[in-house]
Length: 381
Ligand SMILES: *Cc1c(COP(=O)(O)O)cnc(C)c1O
Image 1 (spheres, rainbow, N blue to C red):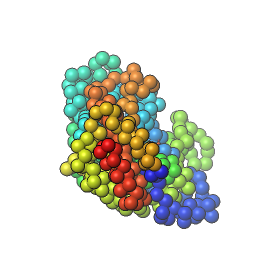
Image 2 (image 1 turned 45 degrees about the vertical axis):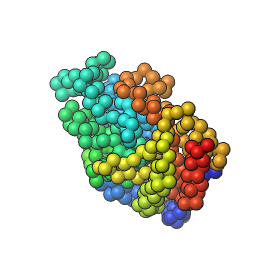
Image 3 (image 1 turned 90 degrees about the horizontal axis):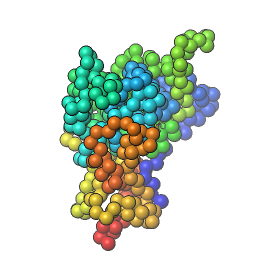
Image 4 (image 1 turned 180 degrees about the horizontal axis):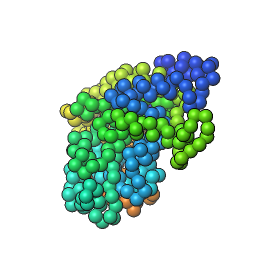
């Protein structure tokens, strides 16, 4: 089977993990946690980085430190992995889902602007969603598939309405918008290092920010909000969300390879496009001129005739090629089905017709040509 996207463990992972085991620093204290945080901060041009057990925990803590409160509303992407919507619910807030645009599959900032103009009002410094009466306290754009949400309008809206921007850049480590690393454009950014992300620690996440108070508070909340180094005294409810030194050791080794992984992912995307763009029924999801993508996942839109997308998925599977459709739009998932959604038609269309192709960094050119041959065969027959 040619897999969709699997970890590439080919650098210093063994050496660093062995060092953890030899020295006994296997838990949440250790040099690798510090180093992994520092190198991540540097990579995404942020002043501070706080490692977490996973990307969902990073989002949860970011929402708390950004001041999102019980009863607030948070604007987020409808077409996304479910994690950010769940994290919004963990703090007692509710998501307002903005549908995707069809070029890059990201949150449609025009739909967002219309929503603000037509369905919201300002009261003092607060932005209120008229129908629910809820205060909108943050924007949580999710950059998906290695591509970027159009951040300029987002940041403009954030500044105009005094909203914090929490970027979910879980799929976009190393991608850039107007030459700035994703995750560093908003007030706070989150990354995930689960098994299929561009770098993986097995499980892991990271919060990045330039706000020293927030970074300090994130570190505090992820370590059970312990106030004193000697005594176990706590003033508020904390979480056990810190990454272990063993995971961070893997992360540090993975980070050393990030540039190489991005180059490889971009080559994979190019080879697909060179060999498949002549097929009329396929359109590629590409970076826009002002962005640079890590091409985490090469993705195609299959023209909506005869349910070709799911048929192609089955055809590839029967030829030992793994592919994946996108997430069902979040507003259609039961736990979030009561939430407000804006402009959902395109997200649904993308969900029904988009397919992610094998994009593992260790995939050989021969293997990729086999994937390409099968896609060509499918459309020719
Ligand atoms: C992977 C991912 C996350 C976080 O996932 P974890 O498994 O908790 O690390 C969050 N948002 C998006 C868009 C993701 O793809």
